[in-house]
Image (tube, rainbow, N blue to C red; front, side, top):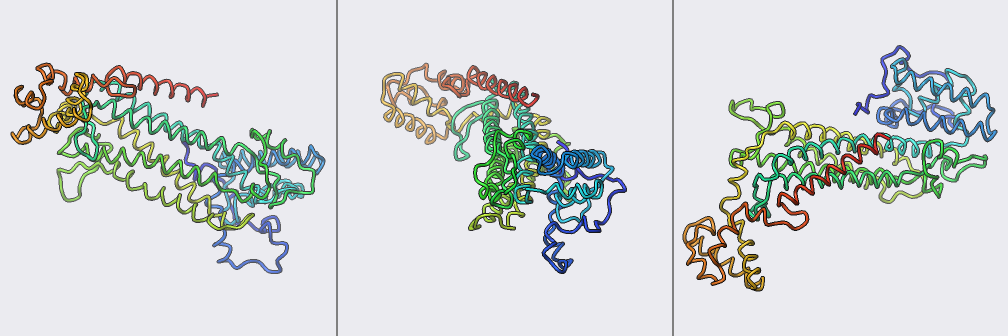
Length: 488
């Protein structure tokens, strides 16, 4: 994904301080004197919203085309505006034109640059439009453009996890609850669990995209316009399914900023949970995984250290994303309808959360794809800890014993082993097992070996190789389909 903070910045000589009537604040006509320099600096948002330059141009092209078609402005003026906007777009992309940070915002910069280039016709671009509906449109266009790129990063990580899981469908790994040995599983089952978290993240983003599929342009400042605007034509030109239904809601709604940032927060929480396990598994005590030296760091004082700093940083940056979400929620709390300047503050937390999760996704994918898995230690993890106690109970259930009774018998076998200083039920002599229940026969030992326990869990979604294979096929189909959809 390109650096969205700089994707419209050029290095050309056209970067200069904005001066002249075309570069006054769009609202300056009512004022006898200009704002204090400190006030201008305080209110300026161009360094945040410049990343939406191309989206602002796209919306303006559609708007100007509609104005000309409706006869609101002359056809020649409309054509000149569209040509001028496309020239600005080309120059921003090539670097021939650089964003001027003395402008109030990206909308002002583009309109002023247009007027500089084509003259009085440029002043007609804003006819029937307010910055209130303009920014609401730009944000939707921007999100619609960049969210699929983030979704592709999610797919890439799912594919990386799936590739590792493919190699470890039979590699035993203890499943934990409360960080205590719970039941035998496999590394593949565990990695698939991570992958399905990411599937939901992808789907949440897709759902959120569906809720911004309506154009707010034409809502004006809050109550629309007396001019014969064709909102539906602009929406269609921009690829929206329709227009927003209420003009006041159109300009004051920031649900989509909150919703996408909430999606980012959940995605970040999943990355953080994965990183927590990576940090734990990389310890000397666990030694389940060894991270590549490319994705590890050392210590300034302890020469032997190999630290999982990148996993820790991803985990640590979760607070940033959660903070961005709280920022947005607090911003809109108690705001009266319709537009309030508070809403200018929506972009920084939204963009920060997006940038953070995007960077974290890329780093986590590279880190996990290059890791080495210690199969021997993974399989040792299922030894001891009585992770097969439930399997003893289910053995008895198959013999006809009620589960609650079987649970008590299995607990008694654990107690006997502990009293004898043993860490495994299967180390108890058969007669000791039978003293807990005569239904415990010699074949129980083969039924409760860690591998037998894992292979016996054939319920849908379980860790048996055939069920894990189904999960892998589901993930593969998901990734393949979404790649195809994106390519269309």
